[in-house]
Length: 291
Image (cartoon, rainbow, N blue to C red):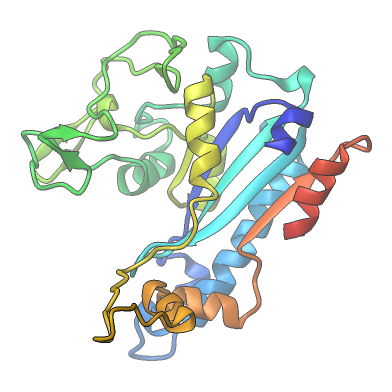
């Protein structure tokens, strides 16, 4: 929170997911191997892609000049590694109106005749799989409702939403694909940046932080900690609980084979960067913990 106090609220929230079908991974497999056989390749290639993305954002200023950023690497169960990234933009590049949002974020399926490659990437990487009555057993469902709010409403223009993320432009046009026998149109498209999605060929969700509600959520989200299993307290029969703190920690923590490889390669799992020469002592201390 000291970072936010010094530099202001985050402007962008990006989620970058590893793509196990990247050519850099597939070309280095031995005969007969699958991608899940080479956790070292997945970890190394994702780390390279992550560094390249950060260079595009922080040095090349693809989305604007950045004054501070926070990112954390996560490994969910048997899932692939992914990065959650918060960006705080300089005042001159702040996102202040719907036109600025449309220049950075798109939530529409591109026309296949105009950009077939981006269309194919979005079709595979940037679609929220149909849920609700179409797929009531989807992981995103809770009490019969999609926890992510899909399908979204059509809209001819981007509008601000004081209770969460912006209502991105989702025009009702002829662009659609077929997923699980269902016509999928712009109501199911995840927000993304066309340039970054096309360059990295990965799930790269790009959200605008438009309200204090979304900011509080994402700040908690990036620091929520590792996945846990269960903790069991047993009585030793003498009226007291036998507490083995080390064993409890080892039993409660879950690390996938990909996270284990990431740590064996000594890659950073969390980092804060500040680019202001007058950062407060609190902010410098917070940043120094993870640098």
